Image (cartoon, rainbow, N blue to C red; front, side, top):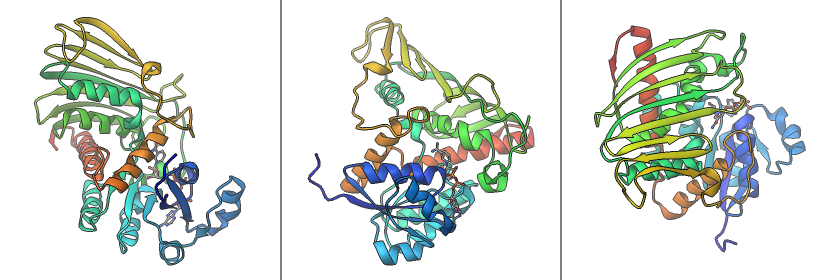
Length: 348
Ligand SMILES: NC(=O)c1ccc[n+]([C@@H]2O[C@H](COP(=O)([O-])OP(=O)(O)OC[C@H]3O[C@@H](n4cnc5c(N)ncnc54)[C@H](O)[C@@H]3O)[C@@H](O)[C@H]2O)c1
């Protein structure tokens, strides 16, 4: 049990993700949910009926006057993030911004610039990067178990869009795009974290059912020379939960990252791992999660994501999931759409 005073945190945008973060902040032993903000004040009764006990304020200004949060979680529609961040940073407040950061690279970089200027801690909501199995794969690659990295293939599929869709989430100007910006971006974040800045992108996207991209194929070249392919769609039947995977080839072998396990094949023993095949199953990884608000989507990663943010606010050290890393993801998103629109490779 922590002796530390809980971090006073608030949520701006009390919709789908705002409620997830609100519940987490309410039950995490190191945080206190001091308020929610939504311009739809009619939500108050609904939020209370869902067990969210903090007051609902009609504006960021009203929240700050009444509750003095130390941290805010920005969970409004993506096109509003920059304006909401600007309002929140009128007083230095640690910042958690849901993904994608913005609808454009320029806005994402403006958000990062404001956070840096205000000298606050910051993080973005690419929650899958907090799964123990993803973190174990990253650690293996970062320690050099595969030797020089050469190439990768990646996929991200889900069964979600099979007909026309309504709402801001399916408008490019408000959501920043379709499957690439809003679903595959979780995997783009992981690819950027594994391989660094991207250099060149050749992409094609297609709208099968909605007015945004429902599928995409992408060829990447990273600044380090690593190249690879991504195939993604949210219109694939039979995949209720996000099905994602990455296979990385290096000079010393291959790592296959899936939802449930890592398969490793090494040509020579390295970093404590034998030559030949080995398997690290997700269930063998340390269970350091006190609770799981959403077992089917993201699962324990939401708790770990919050813990990482709280630790950053306490220590003053930016986390791996900072807004700077999320800007790298935004560069990838923008380059994919630019290449698909132009029908040519683009330099990112
Ligand atoms: N991490 C993930 O896996 C994940 C999943 C879904 C959505 N998201 C992201 O989370 C963010 C929110 O998405 P959502 O699905 O929760 O949206 P939502 O539509 O369910 O909720 C958004 C809420 O924000 C409120 N709002 C809009 N503009 C506002 C403003 N200027 N000030 C205050 N309140 C305002 C709306 O009234 C609404 O209640 C988006 O950036 C989205 O891309 C992330």
